[in-house]
Image 1 (cartoon, rainbow, N blue to C red):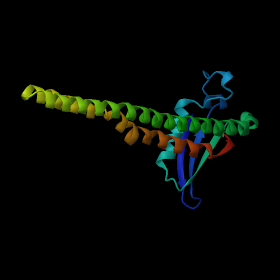
Image 2 (cartoon, rainbow, N blue to C red):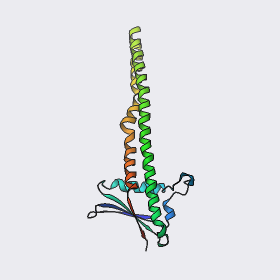
Image 3 (tube, rainbow, N blue to C red):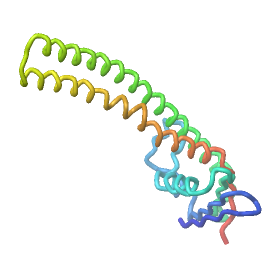
Image 4 (tube, rainbow, N blue to C red):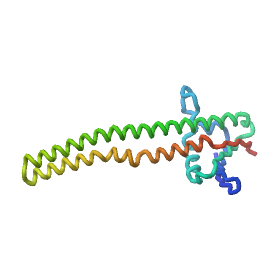
Length: 184
């Protein structure tokens, strides 16, 4: 398998060329048939994602798949399978984003309750006891309550961003034009 990339200025497209010795190279043979689709090989998927990510989003994406002449009859169905696989992956990333936000809501609810309890307990210690040790314990409880907010903040502020970016790149791959050309 070899590849080249070209951004065509006049055509306004990002052209990725991929040469395969056999169409079978494109797919992961370990994917069970019961899933109802063939998975594009992980290394090829990641390679295409990198190439699409490097190209400006304003360019349309096109994969020029150079295949052996004897496999040209199968090439059109393979192109459709590849696009369908990338659409399945896009849907999986979409569900992953939903899961991240669900986990964030659950974690936020739990940590807010814990923060309120820790602060209330810290205030009760301050009221009931005097001295440096009691003040240190109360401060420690309040800090621990705020630390509990770390995970929901991380989920809500940061964790979903790379997943959304990958989902958007997979959407570009799913709608990418795939042209199959016979090798010479």
